[in-house]
Image (cartoon, rainbow over all chains, first blue to last red; front, side, top):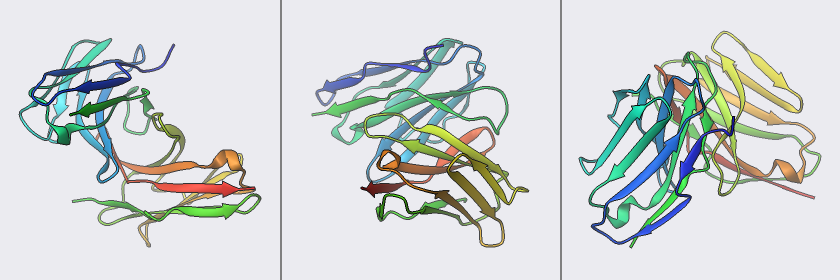
Length: 114
Length: 110
């Protein structure tokens, strides 16, 4: 397996534009997580899915953020409209079944909103 | 609510020495603690997991301890090498989600 795949690697957009980040988890993994990383706040959990169903979205900062997982091999994180304070690195991770399994992370998407 | 704290100060050590990184939690003892390594521009990579009822876990030059009395986990790298330079993150499970500390940057100089 190629691991968790995220696209794009880098995204620069203007304030007010819609941004869509994409993630392909490892095949067979039941859980998918979206994280945001900044120097100030570290790695923050935004939302996670189990078997394509959102389980906990309490980390999503505002209604401008939304996430979907239409099937087991694809998830999106959308920001609409984007703001400069959304600039961060966004990571997707997946794990197999169980709370004690290691998380596999993608390479991340570095988002810059100008 | 549970908080996990890592020393925000970077740790600089000389090659060959043992590096010790600290992870403190504030509330209940998590059932598991995990340690990850993150290199610049890359996602975190899993290193070790330790359970609440385990005092110590080892993997090659790595050792993790879990002290529920002190509410602390220590991460040791023995015989450190410049290639060990990275940011190290600890994380605890809350249900099926992993919550991370901010990480400690380690620099090993020749």
